[in-house]
Length: 494
Image (cartoon, helix red, strand yellow):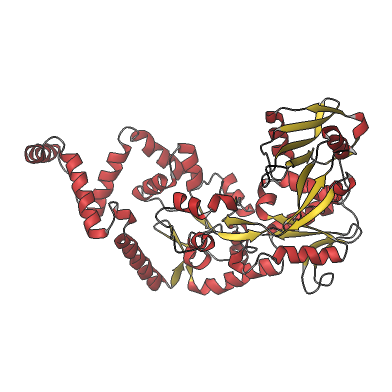
């Protein structure tokens, strides 16, 4: 399934037996390029285009499957030969002629004539085009660009990705939602999507409306979730409470607000600087409001954990347990990591000491400690994890008292206000400035993965030493998204 999921119209087609290139590639164990080449060879065009998704009939999939079965032993050679014949307008070679060609080449160049031919071809290609692989050459890129420009001029359209970036930068669901609303159909030409020029501005305005009027799918889903568990007043898109800023969702009786931060629109590509999210949090704190920022990928891929965070902020739990009825045990690393992955928004982490709180032999809360990431002389509480939708009254304090060693920890201001730490005896040390991640499509990456040294290793051909880390990343299509910083706190042994 494409990242971002299928919309209702897509699902309707899938239920009717239609399929996509992605699904065929997964089913046949092939890559997308292979499937696209076979479809091209068999003259199969998509039967339906919904937004950015291409759909093929079940009989088309059967034709592709039959082709792979018939040519499982000679797939690459057969397809290469047939496409060469088709592209050159020839009829292929007879066996007699093929044998004669082979004999002549062996006499002229030796048995390894094939290898020599490849080497010579590589040398010629590098000499003419500056790269051993013609596909990577500027000449091919220039030719493709010219052909696409010609197609655009003849059909009064534009390359879709040149106008709107990659198809998932705007969240594919959102794009399809907007195009369906406007009745926009894309043009598919040689597996490349184009958009009619007359449709560009209406789609841009519709996308802006989705962002600025906050009708995004994720935000609506969060609102519906809160409505399903909370029956008092819920306010949407309010500009009065922290005027002129807007709050996506506000629950006045609980003094809790929620922001849905789409990765694309909330990145530096759209002018959201390092203090954008923090400033909203500070404005809310001045009013005694706890603001929770939810990143788009968290809602898409860790929804149960996000729902539990929201429920906890509203004081709504499925289970309430008293710590005095629990048993404390040391837990192994595997158990701790699994518990973190199931219940903590940041997932697993390395730890040297781990304690668990068990209720009726079930792990309901855990803490993990390690040497500090920033100071060798400090111990850091790296995770405090509670089972989803569960309140363990006095659990955190009991675990800390049992451990009873000086340690520090960091509270994520984007999601939490630190009330649980304060109640458990932690003392404030300092507030740290916002940190950043890199985002591309629906993926969010920790910044340390993309230091200049790592960029040079991962993208040696694109890396430019003269550019900054951020400039190199933007060149690669990655943009920064900032959190709200952290609060450093300290626990002192009793």
